[in-house]
Image 1 (cartoon, rainbow, N blue to C red):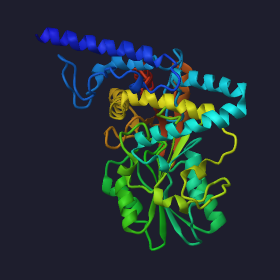
Image 2: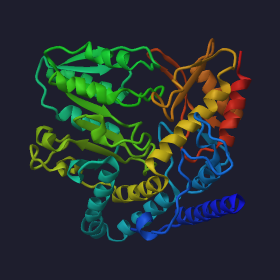
Image 3: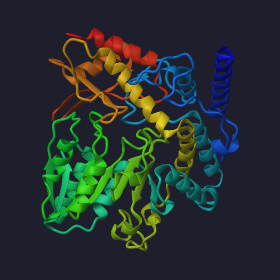
Image 4: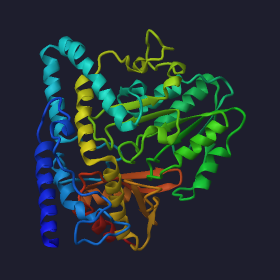
Length: 442
């Protein structure tokens, strides 16, 4: 009976993988995967080992490598370059690229007709689907080009007066730091800087770094959910609760947490939120999303002109003039793939990949990690360095000798190489990274 059960499980799993490969490689316009294929089976739950396989607390997902190889086939991943800079921007699935080509050709046949009379209406189903993933109302979601645009809209739209204080970190993304500096120069607000030693697994320390800066004039607390330099996960909810108790609001940069961590926006307690969809959701290049709590929408002025700048309709933030409708439509196909995988399964896989390579090189002489191995405090992004070697030197060796694409990071107290796999990354590719790092040991 056990043998029969194991054979049945393997058959079901292989059947799912064959269906998935065919499905993800096929371009089906305006079809939702779950609706089009109601009988499709998903692979075994991430945390449950296959029959006959031993469970490992730190590595509960190793038995699914064959499934992830099929997911890789959904991408046109280069067989020659190992792309481990998905934290910057991720490639889109083949179906998304096919959609971009299709909609571009459609628009060019009769631009004003297809753009304004057809595709402009299709933004609403997309908005609904994104809102469902984010766990919020579609009336709180605006679709734009990236996290920088989303967060700049919020930063410049907030009603702040001279002397109002904004608490932010030196580890925030440079574009956002510059946005706040512009408001400081233009409007006379005061920027209060948080400094931290990272990585950290001390929730009290990370929270106190912000709350210790609160004063009677604190109006905004700006937090990066996952620090892009090293993958540090911040205790967003706890900081948000402290800000609200103090009478302040929180803006959250979710560029590196959306479609990485399994959460809904209300879980975080923030008031304003922005992300890029071309990172871990693998949307078309130049796609993003903004969320503003519904009752706060009237208080934020749009970055670009609108006939009702103080209106309560989230769509006032989408007055961009002529935009790329193909890019917007392509988002839905990347969203389908994400939903097929599942947010929890994806988070666990991304942490597994990070843990996979970090655990294999932790004993290399001279290596230093700028990322915690804990799944509570990091996920996809890992950062390492060597004593006596500049990050750019390490990154150059990785690419020139091994064709492994990473990014050198030198920011504040972090001086290392950022390694960011995605769901299409294989453990065989990470084995090559491990070999390369071991070869650089001092």
